[in-house]
Length: 444
Image (cartoon, rainbow, N blue to C red):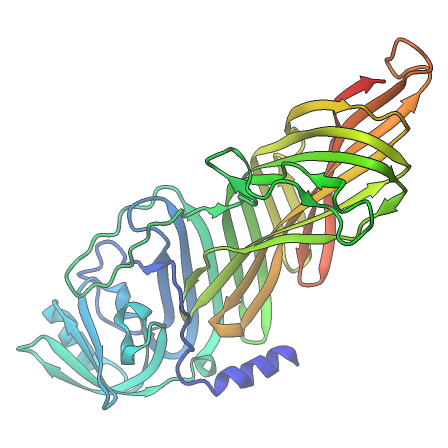
């Protein structure tokens, strides 16, 4: 019923709503100059994130029940103009293509990408065109047009997003070809609260709790941040009312730095803080206006626990790094596969204290990469992603086996634990637990 409701809502939209930002450009297939200019029942488009090098590439294919065409798939389409009178004009540099148009059906769906700014709008638009008239001298063809309810004509669809390391530069063919100036990193940036100039947190000493007496100013994350990057892969396919396949893959590297500081002039009693969202960072959307939008966001949540009373000063922490990790999941049956999380690289930071009493403290950071996908303005919608929960723990023990010279000495041990979780819509699933990592110990 939900998908049916989406369909009826979208069916009333004649021109796809504009999206304000874009990060992909239309790709023209190599050696397409001599291809016949024929519409088919496969309406496809290929879009690249980067002009000059590696980047994400998106491919979308709509199987239509009447003839359809994407002019951007042909090198010889030099210009597209949309007149106020509803006339759409294509300028072609191939005379054979002009002749091909004479054999077109009386009604054809045409996809006009946002780069042509049809009717002044920077969004992909669909029209039904016909009644063609050809001007051989100007090498132009004019069509009458009407806005197209494109979902009415779709039988099935597929959407693919992948990282392409070997993508060739997209060359500007003529002055009419609109290329975006993309001075941005093409990978997904996983930096949260990280200052690249100092190599430390851009928000030092943030509080683990809010409004709790003797706690807010005493227990802080002295130097907490994440840094790294990732690439995204997505595949979604199906019919108008049924998603038959949906998978996601995330590859990259990530480092999490957690340094906890306790400075208490009075005794802190046992307490536990709720999850506190420290920051949410919307990232540059991967999208082609009117066709698909992938809105990534980075979210950082923190909480803390003190298991027993504490008076004194404590500083400890460490860094955990996952290099070349890979995560794959099915959004339909929730099956997952991960690599690269089982052997993290650890860097421990100095444990220092003048605490005179027993202590049990833990501080938890939960960085989350959230992805919000929409295809054709809501035909397909998913909210999915991964969350890494890292917990820095400080525990105290006394007696034999602590490693201290005297049995009555208090041993403070600092450890780092964590797990990886996957979520899609409201479904959440823990999929991997990291081995407990010893960051060091201190005898008091």
